[in-house]
Image 1 (cartoon, helix red, strand yellow):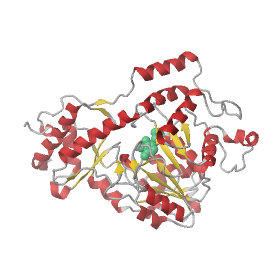
Image 2 (cartoon, helix red, strand yellow):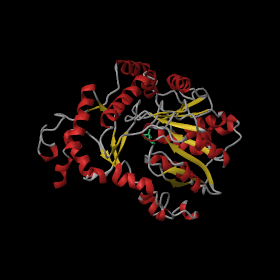
Image 3 (cartoon, protein in one colour):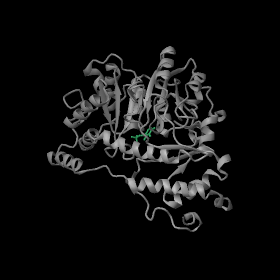
Image 4 (cartoon, helix red, strand yellow):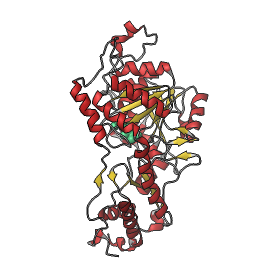
Length: 422
Ligand SMILES: *Cc1c(COP(=O)(O)O)cnc(C)c1O
């Protein structure tokens, strides 16, 4: 075996892994049909035919509902838009608190703010990395209105437990399911257990349409509100005879017919798109499980993990070098990975300085909530020293590449004592 690449040796991969491309002839043909038709969006922002979008949008929503066994699917131009609309649909109002995990993509924590709501951060659990119901419990106050659970890295949060907790405290449970399409808890699909589940179709996710998002709900009333907020609600609440007009300022969160055309094809192939990533992650785990000090991702009993991220834990005390150096050495071999994920979100300047909306600190100035003292110890420690993350969704990975990923990892691990000089 040659020297470590970071010390001048030959890297395991001669060339970096190629970015993943899931676009086939089928997607191209379908988009071309839309372009040739000349109608690139069928939406109208008034109460008439077209309010719910054109033919491919409606087909996508119908197909999505069938695939995920839900009553209503509402397409958006992103998961972020879907999350914002979800907060509007459940009636979040200034001063309401929404409990969110501190470790997630930032949009999860921003969604209450759009309606003057206040995100309150809960810790994640150290085995499966999703929002910890015990931490959620300790954050519930008289102002709490909802919990947003994130099925982080492709593993479902403790959704049933959170649903019970939400019910007991008269709260909504929203699922940010951007990373876990086809993930399951006790046979039930992630994203379909909460009152509203939000999926992402952005370029980096398991399936995509460039940009896009889908909200699902079995509650007809919430579904209607989501449709309205997506499309200039204020203009249609009169003619539609809507009763509940709270938060009915609408946006333009509409997806184009071209994106819907791509999404329809991707949805048809979703099982293959997901199982490919699962296989890569499981192979990695299988061949690295024996390494002392490396904890490959675990799967909770009766759950399915879909591995948006292969999330290992690194034990510096056992391994004897810092995670940073180890990650650098892996990258030098061509094993593209990272440490940390995101810093706990309460550390963002807009929270620390309470200036998310306007310079006066609204809405936080009205609230006793102060982020200065926020501390989620599990999330902090995973971020600082332990997470070692690889994204199977980002790269085109052949079975030969998987073998090389294993080889690169074992090479760095076995030669780690040489890294002490760095
Ligand atoms: C990707 C992602 C989002 C944002 O999705 P967009 O479709 O890009 O808006 C939100 N939450 C999580 C957990 C994500 O991974």
